Length: 365
Image 1 (cartoon, rainbow, N blue to C red):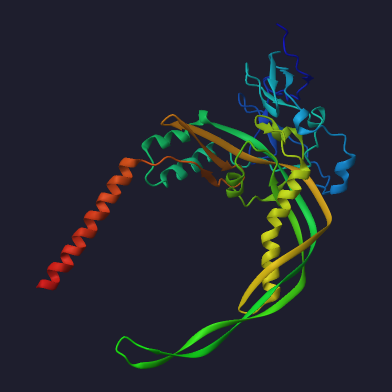
Image 2 (cartoon, helix red, strand yellow; image 1 turned 180 degrees about the horizontal axis):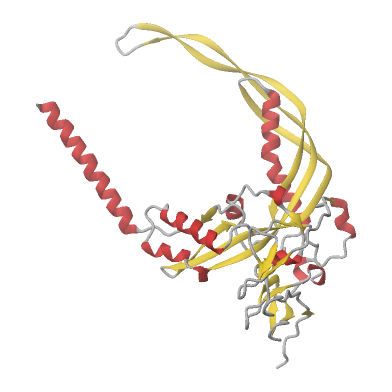
């Protein structure tokens, strides 16, 4: 039997100047902090601008397709152990030292920016406790989600897209008018009433809009619906990518190509453009039959966004909870307690029954 060979990648490491251990990024700060002795090392500010890259640049980048980027081997500089990983950052599976890979060594598009964690472990636990306490009809086992060992701070790749759009539409504008209608009521009396009608007129026109930082998840690791629920993200607080911000956290590589992400971005732009067309048509009602959109000055960039990922098992099923590592917003899956729901239904029925009985007795008296 032959052993599997993994390409070797040398991870970056940040030794503690106090005790020799490895420092980690401290959320909400600009320092690397030792978890053992508390020594802090300042992350040097990078004043370069966060750039938007023309979409045409994709054709010239020496990148590997996501399907060809496999697992790599990391040599821990603290204990010397070798770890197989497909992440850009993580921890040594033997000594738990932070391991950070130079993205250039993977062969993919480099991150342009990172939104550093601002919610630390304590803040994450507080947010989880608040979320747990607000889940009605949840089984008591849901409280286990707040346990620290079930959580993982993770940077998730996202694509952002800018574009100038011009959309030509055809449709119809509806104008209300009223007619008098004669009818006979239940007592046989002739009466009149005003009835609203809609008269439709052809409509067409052109609308324009600039889209800035349309956000598309660059990984399928987390359901898109859950990531969208964590919005809004304070993207203005993003800083130029520096590997130090990843120390102590897991970072996923993107598995959604930017070209695929662009098509999703266009789908996200479509409802906004549709609303622009309706507003441009005016009138009392609008119908949009066709929209043809052209895109100009399209740019993209790769960003890393912070998410606390938690999971717990209940009834043999795994449930995930996600916390925005910047704002503390929590979204997740939860089970329902059949007993609590049944008790609530029974209580409601009893209350309604008591009210009905009271009304009946009151009317009799």
